[in-house]
Length: 367
Ligand code: ADP
Ligand code: GN1
Ligand code: MG
Image (cartoon, rainbow, N blue to C red; front, side, top):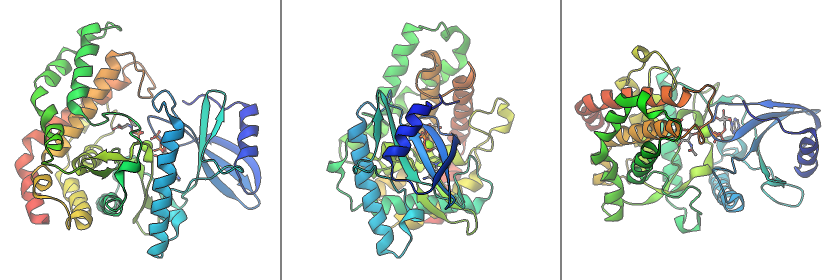
């Protein structure tokens, strides 16, 4: 659960942002693992906004992070207008303060606010395969549009975010220090991680040799970071732009498959409910490739079956590292929460490894 926003800070926030209507109240909202998100309600006219307390422990240069947000939301908003789409539904829209800033700093806390995209849902899991096809289209469109965006303008909000080899090194250091005395209880998960050291270098090496292109990528393409229109079922807007940086298209494809093709919850304790769903893999791949098929390189194509394995492994390793480190990064609700998450990810990795040929066949049909 989030820390409350003090009454004094709420008053300051209301004074700073240019909200319409009479303030009714605010409540915690959504299921993100990083920022504190609130839904804020106004009356006459009835209006909602999203208010976020930015995780400034993770994002240590908030002004530079918010400059990224300004640039990307402005770029995408203009693309919506050019396509005849309402930018307030087709893109994340920042609320600016009376003095024209995209965030408010109150002592050591930072707040930002967005137009609330209503009549649409950021689903936690796939309810209908068509939704996942649409999520693929939305993230694919995002990649295609940002192909025209100059990556050099972007600040690297989390350095080496998907450098899986560096994340592996961090895992080893955390294991060796064992500050929480949790290592003894997770021998199987540690063995699973160590056995996969070799895969951690593959994509970073190809990027450094220019055999894979660096693109502007989202880097956190999980299902609950895309809004699906409740009525039409269309994927209308990509949200959570904290990690938009230069990266590989494989990261974005892989992370969506990681999050959406799981038949169970990310933190499901009963692993017999957790499986890699190939039908959903096909739905997403069809949607995504419809949008990126025109520019994806041969090397990227070849690695589309590896990408989900890499991203799911990386995510599992991050959860396990955070568990060993005393749960300092991801929000948790109970002491074993990160461990439960790591276990679901590793179960998925094992199944994905066995289904590589099936993924390959499906992708060939899609192409
Ligand atoms: P985190 O970085 O913590 O994941 P997000 O930016 O993804 O934070 O926001 C958390 C959740 O809040 C999202 O999954 C979604 O449910 C909801 N949300 C965020 N922004 C909006 C928005 N503009 N309109 C509607 N819902 C939103
Ligand atoms: C975090 O912010 P959120 O909840 O959308 C994390 C992702 C992980 C994901 C796992 C900035 O995503 O990298 O894949 O949790 N975001 C950040 O669910 O670390
Ligand atoms: Mg999110």
